[in-house]
Image 1 (cartoon, rainbow, N blue to C red):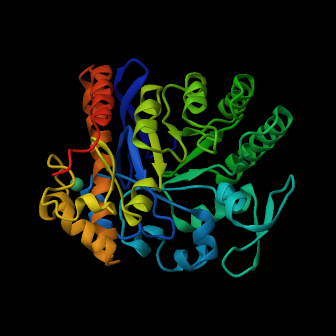
Image 2 (image 1 turned 90 degrees about the vertical axis):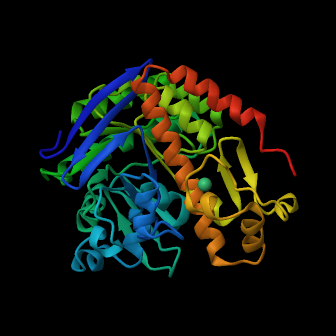
Length: 376
Ligand SMILES: [Zn+2]
């Protein structure tokens, strides 16, 4: 473990774990959900509002930030924490996944990836070494190794060669990261849905040695059943005494299922992106605020929710401002969604601590099965 950072496990119920990652910028209670602040902002939210929902850590996207406004510029302006006014921990991804999903004219070699920016067409290169440098300039607390992630489905040969390239890049990332007290470097397990490749990847990562380990290459189109089947074995291959991070997940039921299988950290754009499109997550499932059934409804989204959208506003108002295209709509719905996700994490942490995770999971599913409150 990097000097100045620790991971203490505080409880376990089945495979589900609770713990605390301590960093110089603050503690991260696990299982943790990380809101995504793609371009140095969690869209429609002030940083203090994100904190008020219960978030201990944010995720920033290396690919977006290196292209605009640029990592050197952020570094000159005091680093990402100062730049975006968030003084708690930040995890940055390596840029690899988004190069593959967003950039144009990509060329993949042993050295790394060259590509053109999706913003202005300018040419860039990302390698394990340059990704470590960009993440150092940003000042992130948890740095991700540079990897390649194939879209699924892919054939076994493609998955194997991609995973082996990612393991060579993991070793180069480790070397380039060096010794940075107070900062952690996470390796990323690859191998698709294949148990033997997952084991080969985990073994390579354990030999290199990281401060935490991510399960990568899931939530890329394989579906929940295939993802859970892989999570039935993949996290167990990673060291028990280090945090395990499932990248890019997910929906509330994905999150509960991942925690059940031993995952400690997750991130997803879903709560913030859905907030801007009128999709709301509640204990009773998804509510579409666009629907005309809400237009005269004086009740809150969720009477048990303590967020500002539920304490101060009716469904009728939220429906109206969404339909009118008012900015407060995205603000309130995003706040509610992030609050719901953090409440879900807090509920799971308490249930694991009390040894009643199975009961929590059963209640979670039965409340969702009931569906939204009946129309007035
Ligand atoms: Zn709410």
